[in-house]
Image (cartoon, rainbow, N blue to C red; front, side, top):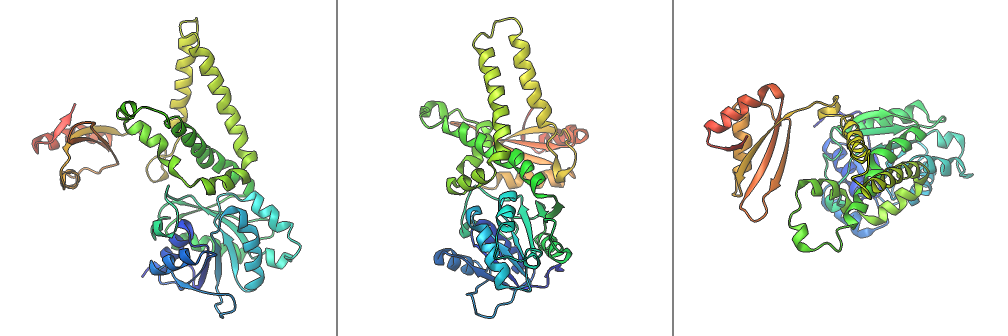
Length: 367
């Protein structure tokens, strides 16, 4: 059992992917968890997964903390009701937007300043393209940012509990104000979702012969396009003021590249294309690297692996036995062949050593 920052019990309202994952993670710490959901089916699945025990209003359950994990459209009224139902509890929500929810709560005439003091926004920057309690994982938040977003009236006690929940779930706790949070997630989360969905939408009428050529580049850039459209309707509607300027900037870049490609032989066209690609290089280089550290260039060693059970495990085991730390890994299947190409990333100074070790063990290393 882990050392806990929360004493518990905790009530989780909403047993979708995030709510059920939070409940499972807290239960793994030995914290008592109660569950509520408007969907009896989702609630039963969460219970069957061991996320907690269903708790109905009036059953005497008195939580230390309430975590609201409902869709954004209903977060504010659910938070408001929880603040009034549990006068001794802090209440947090874990929706991916914060300003619109806070504004609705501040405008709620049924809430007193003392009740609002027990509310703190939060947002775990973790998730999957799958949804629902069946997709929940107790370790979903491990090492992920857990953003705590207090408002001016939030009590120190409520802020402490909001941070404690993230710490117990193994997340990296960060504090931001609501506006900074919404601007940040618009850029690093909401905009990528829109871009991925727009890109994937161009594939709808593509011939199968073209899609058969797809590699990891297309898979990487369209992975999150499989996300639940119903949830994203709400997220984008709530955070539209922050997402719009980014999309307008993208439109400007698209107009620029379209104009250039209409006459790619024109003077300056090649330079313009190079500048656009270079701007992309510069942006990608700013994305934090492993464990949130500054970006670092790793050396890549490509290995051809037969598509047979146990081959990947064997490769990773032998890299470890060579005493070389694997920094990252990517795999690409070869169309029409029973092999895959595994790109192993290591520190540049260990590349030659890894190539020699794998070659000696008869792995097919691509030079």
